[in-house]
Image 1: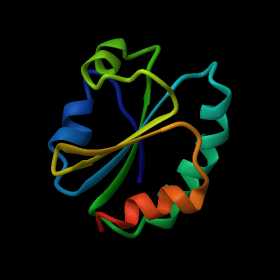
Image 2 (image 1 turned 180 degrees about the vertical axis):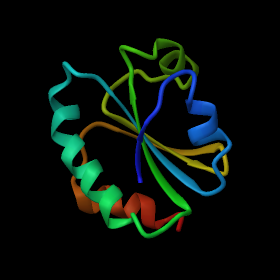
Image 3 (image 1 turned 60 degrees about the horizontal axis):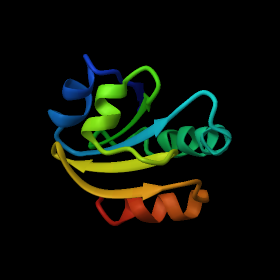
Image 4 (image 1 turned 120 degrees about the horizontal axis):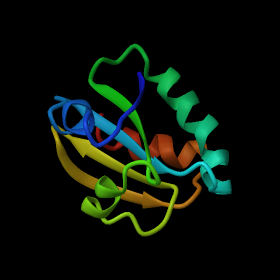
Length: 107
């Protein structure tokens, strides 16, 4: 499942979610973010049958408070949350296989 979250919905979509939430912090102007977007969406489709995994996109320009709160210093930035707790971070463009391996560690 792919969800777009903002400062109002992040808590419900990620923090209160019981399972694994993979969050992509990105921006419209970011070239590597645009390259990661289809990979992220493809992975969300690959895991669509698993209700314990959620893929969430957060636009850093539109949600600066979240960016500051989660110390986003470079994008794209993937953060993995388990039952609302941040457990891992990956910064920069990564191939699908690497991102799938990251997710695979927690499911």
